[in-house]
Amino acid sequence: VQLQASGGGLVQTGGSLRLSCSASGFTFTDYSIGWFRQAPGKEREGVSCVSGIGDTYYADSVEGRFTMSSDNANNTVYLQMNNLEPEDTAIYYCAATPAYGLRCRGELAPFTYWGQGTQVTVSS
Image 1 (cartoon, rainbow, N blue to C red):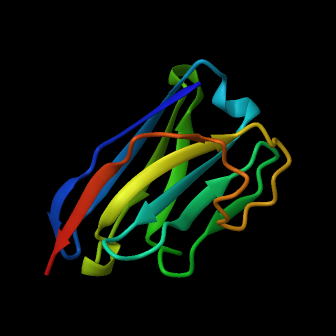
Image 2 (tube, rainbow, N blue to C red):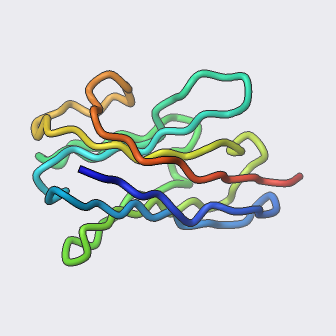
């Protein structure tokens, strides 16, 4: 099982980025997928999640600005990030768990497979 996150970069406040998470070694529609982030000096936190049964979660801080979507044919999950703020600056990770019926709450513990992270920097 491998996850490859990409799409990070430097953007100004109010800008947009789309992160991609490519999965190999498994069919991601059989898994629950999450996006997490870790800012300097802070703990890793849940950003969004979609479970195999369609349960979804967005952190309060990103609700209405971030959206998860998927390309099943290419085994890829996306995180569209709009109206970015300096507080969104972090390394973003995608993660997967075979817990198909996960109740998405932004928790790290259920996720067993992690990508390497992609840096998002939002300048003020």
